[in-house]
Image (cartoon, rainbow over all chains, first blue to last red; front, side, top):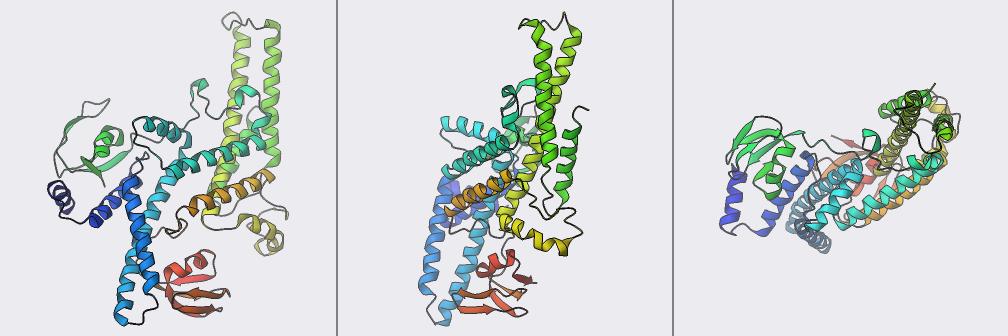
Length: 223
Length: 214
């Protein structure tokens, strides 16, 4: 129940320091990114804040290493342990995103273009750059290996004719676990007669496609 | 037979999935599959020639069927080729991420073949990458380095295991020379054991110089 209480406290008062809330938010992003079948929007602000703090802590560690006082030494170990954990969190988060980007590049690129219109970018600038560069590398590789010798009509990499689309999509109907942070009400699962009533504190196993919109606004939490 | 070399490529790709190393590039098969596509395309052109652009499938079911088969075969071959190449590039990318110097290893292979004999299976001492693949690896490494460079504080290629302890016990497997840590320099000589900060030696563990002791 702790997580829910935290959320409620966040809405009611700003008594929890920003640092703690950022950690919670980053952890939540990390869990969600690892579980959700689709790529989630890039949480720019949290990442910026966390990175800034990591930078400051590294400076602090570098400044104080020369200090021979045993007390400082001990404090530094605590700081460094925390630093390692933060780094791991960010690293694992970025790698989880990259894995998805590599798995469904063209699909994500299209989604990214749509997401720019509603000004909630799916990718960060550097991820976008990585994706486009990687795609052009792959295209060059295919071309020089075999594709250039193909008839012109068959050279495209995003062909959708012939009943099969070449643009691969993640399985949006994959089952995931969600916890309700706020009352959502009744949800109808597409293509079935199943209706579920989601109340605060409930945990459900549902299709990602059915609950995606509530996860994005933060009513549901992926676990 | 139509699609046979394509099938072989896919089988190669599937086998590669389970292998720790990358088997030699199937230049011949790739060429044969590509040639088949070109032949099929010529076939299609010859079949369509007498109709001069006004082909009606319902009046000529037999020709329509031949055309369809040719088209499907070409598409299938393309998918097979793409799958084969993608599978290999995925593997190469994975190596780039885990810090293996693929190109350097390729050059060493002739010397090592004698030792590994059994599992390198008929490498014949030549590189198992095609020239295109070597070029791809070079460019992908550059891309990776560029992307990593934006996250210098994080070390993106670091361990994906959650860190438990700041310091760990390691044993030195190969001489690695002297390294600088904030507690002074350590000389890593073979068979010695150290208690060091994990962040300082992560790369060396990945590269196989050190072994982590639990």
